Image (cartoon, rainbow, N blue to C red; front, side, top):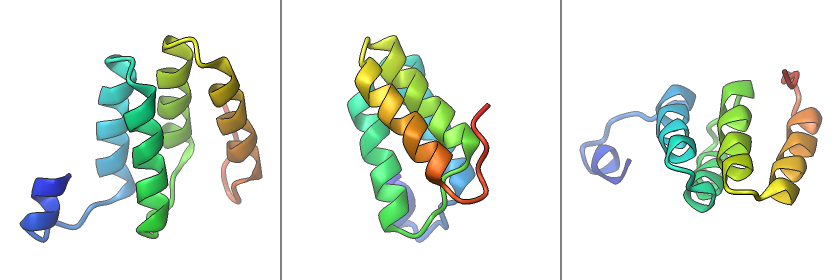
Length: 83
């Protein structure tokens, strides 16, 4: 993502979802949660895929409390229905 910033490439929810999904597959919840925070700070709206991927990263690393907190955030996010 940093290289994309340097090249002035527009980042979208799909861009972040791809990177967060890679974090989930690698069982790296901290970077996944950081990316969720970063996208929000940049005004990029997360979707259900975003939340599912971050929760998957947390669950895969036995971080159940974080996963449940994310589920609660997802439920409170306008326009998003957890699945």
